[in-house]
Image (cartoon, rainbow, N blue to C red; front, top):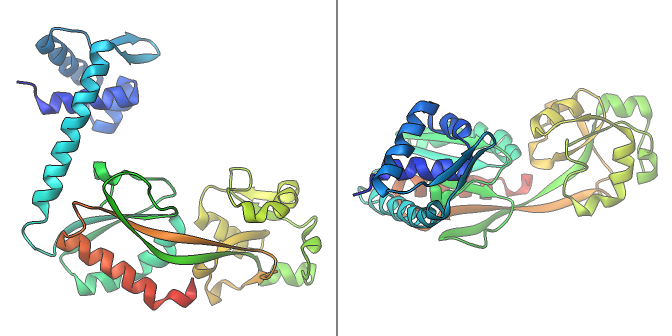
Length: 293
């Protein structure tokens, strides 16, 4: 009889390709990982990985076991999701993964309202610009920029939102009015570390931004603070801008991107009371503030 915990460690090693990164992810040291893997290989009577200074590579037997272990993992996760929703209790931890701007500027300020409504729910907010795997319980609910095309997931369009070009009132007072895109030539810009982000609607600005970019960050919040400080022009989420920031939207007719937020839940968790409660709360808050987006 194989031990699921050994298989779980085996899968983690196969996915990372190294003992170092696996140990870091699981909180286990190299010796423990090697011992557990050796025990599994002994139980099966075959070598599962070829080891080298560059990492580990699955053998043919290892590849076969990956397929079986993955199916076992999926069944274990599915069983947990099914049983989890049977008690009907609106309490416990709910992890909500969102893009940075939505989590930081919309959800975090409303966490107090959620707590007042459901005091026994502990919200874990993960406002990061990365995709999460709901099937593997990296989150219970995800707010995504795209509708997922695969998996046992339920998704619904939450709201369309706008991104515009902004500058601080102090910066505009120094340089004068910006009435046309041509007036942006030579002005300082704030952008992402990636070259001009994936916004095809703004390709006509790309060369201007690339030529005069003075600050880049992978963080939306950092870009916001840089624009507020008067460092340069930047693309900001309109719903995140507040009057006290003293920033002004520039060329709203010429520079605007409209995108969508999607709410995504795993089908097995959609009726779990605490997860349903958080999903309904988020949807209700967005509907109430739809004009801001």
